[in-house]
Image (cartoon, rainbow, N blue to C red):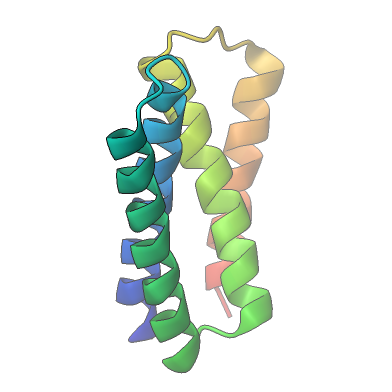
Length: 105
């Protein structure tokens, strides 16, 4: 499971990139855009290392899909003050449950 550390780094870079993209939308400037592109590139570098270390494309993609949805939704709720209702909360809970089920053998 040594791939998991590089995968988490990848997920962090992607989440930070998504967060900064939301800020860029209201503050367009070239330096900020270049910074975001570098962050995404670094994230993909760690994705490649994660694949090399055994994450597997299918399993890694599933972890990424659920992980990025959860981190982006959490940022939306806490930073952008987006409303959450019971159905959205239940969907996030199902995402967490799916991660638990994916990790168990």
